Structure formats: structure tokens, C-alpha cells
Length: 174
Length: 341
Image (cartoon, rainbow over all chains, first blue to last red; front, side, top):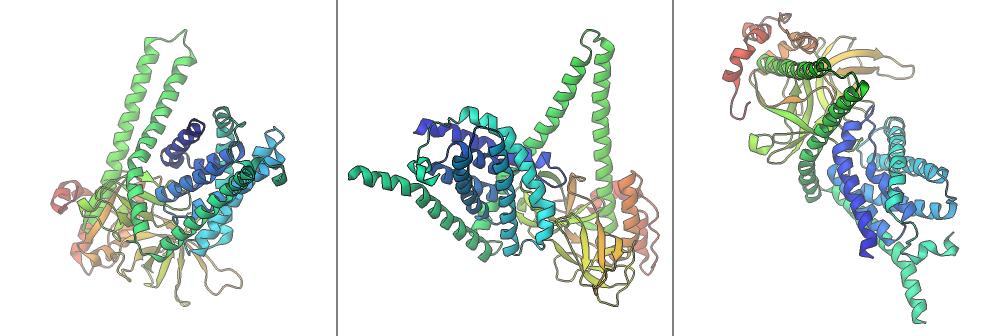
């Protein structure tokens, strides 16, 4: 069990470093890729289970702590989105690239949009439209690209056969 | 029976953990929103930012190093068979030119800082930008100076072209600066020509908007915007920017006024954290000359001159602004106080 989790943990450390050290240096027009979100989505697709929620919580928390946003918002959203993505992937997966791509786009955009809603709710942003046009959409697209780059690498290291939780593999959830 | 119970527990474990973590996350957000800037969650966040700053700095050096390696590989693989001493020499010279250009630009930026320091008679702490926000929703930079150098939250930060932001938190050796262009920024300003007061706010677009002006106030493109000092967050008379457009839209009572920011986050590497302004009125009167001087400072190294103050009630201020560039290098050390660098 521990050895099965090791690649996930190593991946988490790598994406955290990427987020802190690389992401600010490859920003395009103030849009920045979110490697942490991309990684959680990948794990949600390849390794769903209880550890996924812990990973989503920890990486979300680190994202908020290393950034300047409201602490707690990103873990909350990551847990929700990873839950939805893991279910959707289990249901839709047909071993093509289209399904992960579609899920990346939808989940990234949904997450950025909900994050903007959090900021608006806490009075840290003014306009929904601006938040969507200038941040949510470009960041979601950039994160999708990052996710698609990471996906084949992660797939190589994270074995998909091992599904640790019964509830994700149970047919009635599909 | 026991097996069935075990299966049910396993099925419930995942969602149960998720729900618990969701509740913890919401509790954290609530605590973050309710506590002040000095609250425990904010303190932990500041500590993490301080830890992340050197990593971010390493990242920027890795990025420039990878650029250099890429260029070197490109040079080497371009024509390997005819690679000669000339190519090698050319590469060395290119490297040298690049290095000298880096020094020249740094000298230019530092000269700009010295000019602005002299112009406003600032007591300040010079600092380098060592990190930028790792999320795209905040325009925040990290500087390499902190409370050990006399920096505290609330102090204004200036680049060679004028005001760029405000310190929002500080650790012993780093501090975080929220830039004016951040959507959460807002400062009390006045239009220099008409003395109309308003608020300049940042936005997600990266533009500054002048708002809350009196309905009778007249503003036109080219007007210089300076801090009013109201509210006590900023010293009076620091140049914020220049009005670039005034658009009256149908149905709106007040026009949309766009102010050009002094600099964007990518364009400065060294800044001054202002701890005191020696002569606020001088700074205010010299602001118009400062705006033009800043333009020239950003475009070329010689920023002298055009600062002939229109209101010459205070001759010393006029002279200080007009002679800033010529005396800056000589007077820099005499102006420095305490933690100045």
C-alpha cells in the first residue's frame, strides 16, 4: 500500500516545486498554469480512492499557502472537482485521449470559475465577467495544456490497475 | 456478515474522508475571512510565502539557465562540421555583450531609482524582486528585504518610474508587495492639474481605473495622477501614473478613466520601499516634472532636465527636481539613512 502511494507522493512534491518555481516564470499575459490542479485531475482519473481526497486537500492547501488567495478555498474546490472527475472518468473512459482532454477542459474551467466565485464572495474580486475572461478561461486553458503534458508521464508511473477503494470500482456507481 | 460490514465501511470511507476534508476546508476559509491580517492563518501563509521566495528565485535562474543552455546547444548543433575558432570566439563575445548589456540595464534602473529618491527626498530601503505570485489571481511580488531592514506592512514601494505598490506583509528577511494593478489595490489620489480627488483601483485586466471623482471634476488625457495622502496609507505627492483615456459612456453618470500604471510586474527588478518622504510638498510640486523625468528615465539613461517646476513657490523643491540626475550619484550616500542601500 505504501509503495503504491509513493509515486503519487513524489509526483505531488514535483508539481509543488513546479508551481512555485516554474509557473510564475512561464506566465502568459498574466495567465499561469496550475500544475497542482492538473496533477490532482490526473490522479483522479488514474488512481481514484481515499488517498485522492487527501492529496487534493494537501495540494490545495499548499497552493493557497504559497499563494495569496483565501486559505481553504482551493482544497475545498479540488476535493469536489476531483470527486466529480474520478466518477466521470470511470463512467466515460474509452482509452482515447479525448476523454481526459474533455475532462481536463471542463474541470479546469469549472474549478477556476468556482475559485473566482469564492473570491467574489469574499470581496477579493469585483467583476464576474472580468474574472471569467481575464483569468478563469486563459488559466483553465493553460492548465489543460499542462495537464495534457503531464498525463502521459503520470500514466507511465501511476499504475491504473490498482484501485484501492471499492466504491470507485463498484458497478452501481458507473 | 462481517465481510459485508467490511465492504460497507470501505465504500463509505472515501466519501466520509472527502466530507471531513471539505468541512475542514470551509472552516479554514471562514477563519481566513474573519481574522485580520495578523491572524494565525495569515501568519502561516506569510511564512510559506517567505519559504517559497528562494525557490521561486531558483526557478527564475533555472529558467534563464535553460535559455542559455538552449542557445548553446543550438549554436553547437547548427554547423558542427565547420565549427571553428571564430564561432567559439563569436559565442564568447556574444556572452560578453549580453553580460555587459545586463550590467548596463541594471545601472540604468538603479540610476532611475536614485533619481526618484533624490527627487522626492525619500528615506527608503532598496530591495530586489526575488519572487512573484505563484497564482494568477494576485499581482504580488516578493522582495529580499524584511522587518530586519525596517520594512513593515503598509509602506509604499516605488520603482524608477514612480509608485508601484504597497507592502502587505513582511517577515524578517522578505516582504510581499501588492502591486497597484492588482484587483484588490486601491489608493486615494488627486488629479494634479485640477486637484480633484478620487480613488485609483487595479483590475484583472492589469489597468488602473480612476473612480469616485466629483461629478464636476474635469479630467483629460495626459493629466498626472498623484497620491493624495488621504487615509494615511501613502505619502502625499507620489506619482501614480498618467491618464490615458477618458470615455463617457451612454447611460453612465461618470466617465471611465484609465490611468497608465508606472510599470508592470515584469519590468522592474529593483525597487525602493519608502519609509519616509523628506519633503512631501516638494514631491507634490515636483510631480509633474517627475512624470516627464520618469518617462525619460525609462526611455534613456539621462533623465535630467525638463523638471522646471511650474509653481516656483518653493525654490528648493524646484531645484531638487531639476538637478536630480546630475546630483544623484554624488548625493546618494548623503541621502541614505538607516537601512538605506
